[in-house]
Image 1 (tube, rainbow, N blue to C red):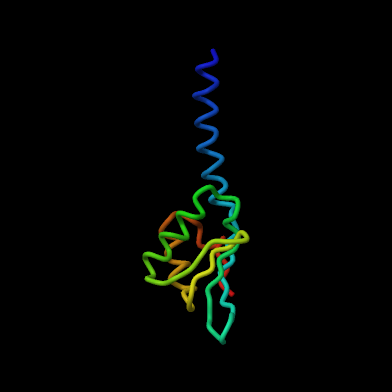
Image 2 (tube, rainbow, N blue to C red):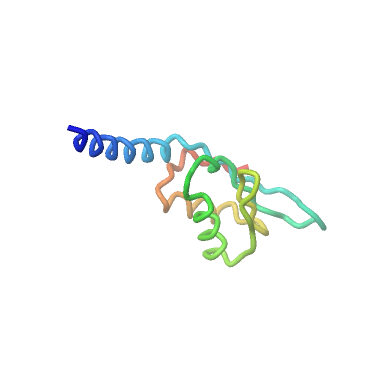
Length: 100
């Protein structure tokens, strides 16, 4: 019986991950940092386990520098549209992504 519970719990975990992806509210904004340089800031992904992987893939695909710290992904330059398209391609709902 414990094997059945483990199997059911595993499938429930998959369902919860999928629901988290659907209800995640992502905010992509442009901020001006040091020396009047624009940056793209992505918030709302801090609870995801793969946020550092997402940051790494974004930097690689966009060919830009950046980091993940304090619960947000910070990319050099203005890449708001590209980040939105990347997240939609990864399965995020278009309505859950807010560009500012």
